[in-house]
Each structure stands twice: as C-alpha cells, then as structure tokens.
Amino acid sequence: MAEIEFRAVAKNGLKVTTIGLGGTGLGNMYRAVDTNAAVNTVHAAYDSGIRYFDTAPVYGFGVSETRLGLAIQSLPRADIVISSKIGYDLVPIPPEELKPALWDQPGSFRAEFDYSRDAVMRSLEGTLKRLGTDYVDMVSIHDPDEAIHFGPGEDPYARSRFREAMDGAYPALDELRSQGVIKAVGVGINQWQMLSDFVVAGEFDYFLLAGRYTLLEQEPLATLLPLCEQRGTRIIIGGPYNSGILATGAVKGATFNTRPAPEPVLERVRRIEAVCARHEVSLPAAALQFPLGHPLVSSVIPGARSAEELKQNLAYLGEDIPSSLWTDLRDSGLIAQGAPLPMTDEG
Image (cartoon, rainbow, N blue to C red; front, side):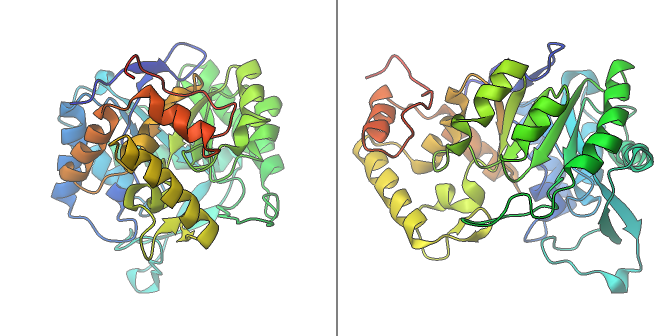
C-alpha cells in the first residue's frame, strides 16, 4: 500500500493527505455509478488512509455531495477534510427538462453561474444539507471562467467572471474564514492563467487546478507558481491524468483535457511511455507522482468510480520509481528543466 503523507494546504496549518478522492466520479461523470458503489469507494479511501475528499454542487447536480454525505455518516468527521465549491446556483427543474450531457443521471437541477454574496450563502447551505454535516473545511470559487476547456490559441479570459468573484464571492468567503466557519479559501478552475490574477487580488490558501501542472503540462512553472510561492498559496492537482490519456496511454480515443487528444500530444505521450518502459515504470504511476515533486503541491485528487479504481490509484502512488526516470524525462525534453522532481534515493 502507498505511504500517504500529510501536507499543509492552508496558511493556518490545515493539512490534507497527499492523495485525496475527487468527487466527479461520485457524481456520475460520463456514466452512472450505483450509490452503494459510490459509498463503498469513499469507505475504501478512508480505510486506505485517505483523509481528503473533494466535491462540488455541480458534480451531478447535487449527486456527488449527497453520496459523499451518505458515506461520511459512519466516519469520524473530525478525521477528514472536505472541500466543496461555490459559483454554480442549482435551480430545481422538472425531471423531464433534464439535459444530462456531462453527468449521467444527474439531480433535477440546472446550474446557473452566480458569484454574489447571497449565492455563496445559499450554495453553502445546500452543500451542508446534502453532506449532512454542519461544516465544510475548504471552499473554492468554482469555474470563474465559465468552465472553459480551452485549447491552443483560445483566449482563457473569453468568459471571465473574475470581477464578480472578487467583488461578491471572495469577501463572503473571507468573512466566513475569519469567523472560523471555514478553514481555507481557494479557487477551482480548469486553467492557470486567471489564477495569476487571483493570487495577487486576495489571500487565497490554495488553488485547485484541473490538470495544467502534470507530466504533460508544466506551463505554470514560469509565472503562476513563483507568485504562489511568494503569496503562500498551495496547489491541489485535480485531473492528474489530464482527463484520461496519462492513465490509458496514447491509445485510440484517448482524451486530453476532456477533448480528443491531438497528434502532437499523442506523440509526446508515446515518447514518455517509451522512457517509462525502459525503467519498468507504469505511465499512470509517473503521472500521479510527478506533481507531488513540487513543494507547493499539497495533494493530487484523481477521481474513482469504484473501490477497485481507488485501490489502483493507490498502487500507482506507491509504485517504486527510480530517480533516473525523472532525469531521463528531463534530459529528453519531456519535462521542463525547472520542474522539481520527486527524486528518491533509488538509482
């Protein structure tokens, strides 16, 4: 079993495990999961030493939070850290009006962006009710770019709600933090560029970044991460497999940041796979462990739809990786020169 450590995630000393459980799978992302299986996944995570669980109202339109809530009723609440998010207002609708899209069998809601103070309070009230708890530890401003999964050449600021988030949501969350109602405030987003604005605009404990600092992408190294270091803001990596390709390899139909992987990405992954093969290391293990080499990264939170997937992620985290793999990847130009590496004492 992987050795799971704790790292600081907030300026007040709050710590999370270096691997957490992302809540998209609990919310039926792409395909439905049985409620019992979802609860068993959470319990398997806890039994394996994971103490950090992330969710959001929009994950399955309430389904992820509800299932996590069912699971934690039999767990010691003080032993775990839960992060959720605000920014999507869940508006009840008749079941016949549902448009599942990303979520299979979602709750009977539609999601509307709202970063006002009232929406923050309303959203947190709904989250606490669905979770069946009287507090959440960490709260992120969710998708202030309207969840853009932009590609090369596209504008990451095309649908920015930065000003709304800083004028409405941030003061509300900052007040709740100062009152001790929540312990940490962050931003959860699918891109890194806007975080360079957030990090200097407020006192953020952490950023939950979906991909963008992975075995395939290290662009934040040059600008964002130095700013985070100066400001004392930690990083949590969601989607460490870049939504699929670093788990599956460069296979037909592989996805990269929720889109079909383009040929340059497929070719880069093939080259990474070849280096991993020479060192007898699995690609997913390298992908899961790489972000943790950076001292600012507190946790990686891959999703899991079953206890079996959860245990496989833990096996990847515990897989022995020689330091020579990382240096070979760097020397081959497959990892940025300035990227901190998760070096070990093994050759």
